[in-house]
Image 1 (tube, helix red, strand yellow):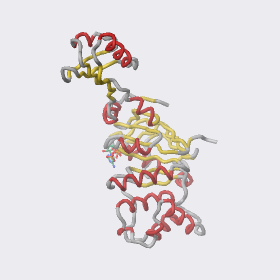
Image 2 (cartoon, protein in one colour; image 1 turned 90 degrees about the vertical axis):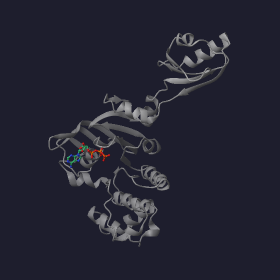
Image 3 (tube, protein in one colour; image 1 turned 90 degrees about the horizontal axis):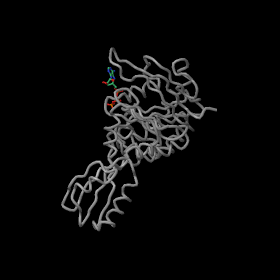
Image 4 (cartoon, helix red, strand yellow; image 1 turned 45 degrees about the vertical axis):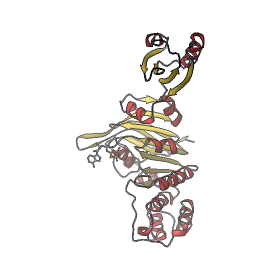
Length: 312
Ligand SMILES: Nc1ncnc2c1ncn2[C@@H]1O[C@H](COP(=O)(O)OP(=O)(O)OP(=O)(O)O)[C@@H](O)[C@H]1O
């Protein structure tokens, strides 16, 4: 049995003469959330639209549970749920009417429709709004209806394109909880350009920039990638700056105040121990030593530098 639900092989797409994505390859595990990260125009929606069969690729293949989406689109699509960036809601239908329509469109057996609609509403906690017109729901609840339509036919793989876009902070937290909950029994791929979204929701990450994959790994890989490279030191009886610069492993020292310094170091993590020992030996009276980690935003900027990093 395949360990992965999705295989993307050498996927490329060109709009007219412009390549939107080029030679993208990745796999998605059967459970959990994969974040497709990238800045605006990176190629996220193009990738997702192709995977979901909404757009035909220029080159490459997509397999859903081993089914080639190009050769057998109907069978492949039965396994996919999709919430596009603009949720395809019909505001003048009630939640029940809309989900029933979606289930029928998704070729659910008509004897099963009522049951699957109830289950999707239950899962997305919208059962109490069954008879409400969609237009009368808040943005957060409309998004829940959007997610319910994506899972109503019980797909093994669900794609959510920027699912928290435009929601208020409370709604964002609730939708993230819901996404993690539904990912317990299926694979989810979500796209975002917000790093905190990825940290809060995803297990694995693919980052694309200018149509190329620039990072692939787990959320821990990403966090570890951003190794600390500076620390702040307070020395009440600091030696001259030149002396600090001579410490092996220290590449640069900046004066912040007379007693406070920012020290840049190469990758050796033992450096802090060394500073502590030197301070004790020379009576520099160390009162603070704090590692500074670059923010994820900095990592994002670095990773956008297009060198492919595969942590798998
Ligand atoms: N229908 C289209 N016709 C021509 N070019 C397009 C079309 N759709 C997207 N593009 C271009 O393809 C590139 C990738 O766009 P895509 O929408 O996939 O990026 P994205 O990462 O989803 O961006 P965003 O976060 O802004 O939605 C961009 O340069 C975009 O301008």
